[in-house]
Image 1 (cartoon, rainbow, N blue to C red):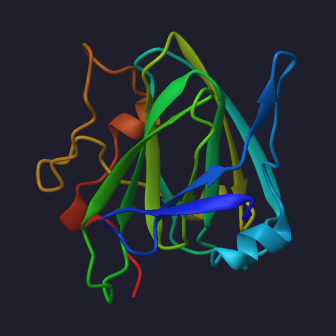
Image 2: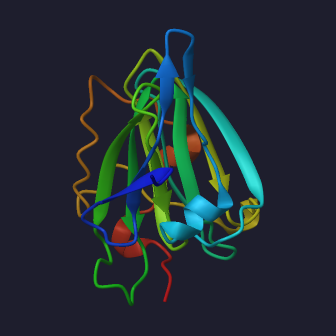
Length: 183
């Protein structure tokens, strides 16, 4: 039996991974990363950095991307729940400008694969959330860009519960048609 089930989204290169979880009265166990299992579902990139974010309810982070050194990300939540969003910024892609939103939580243990060339962000649904993500390239602040989370052309449904808590940097995000994108 496969260690991972691959669940497609509306964006063919973005997909959900559901791990095989072994649980009993003591708790649970699952492989959160296995290079061979990832290759079997189509993720052959090398990960060079792990990140851990903890945020409170209604914190909205993103939409971030790097114009040089683009990062593929494998995102999961170990505690709490988020709405995770990916936006295709590759001009040559048939899904350019389209987005996908997926619920990730410590309970469902699902992961989201977002390949390089996409902007990424999330909103915290629970009281707090611990988000872990593996990246395929190093963080390069001089190349980081922010796409406006509330861009009226993208019309992302963040399923807001009140006003989001957004950093000053993220409040200055550029609109989709003004943003730097990929070829």
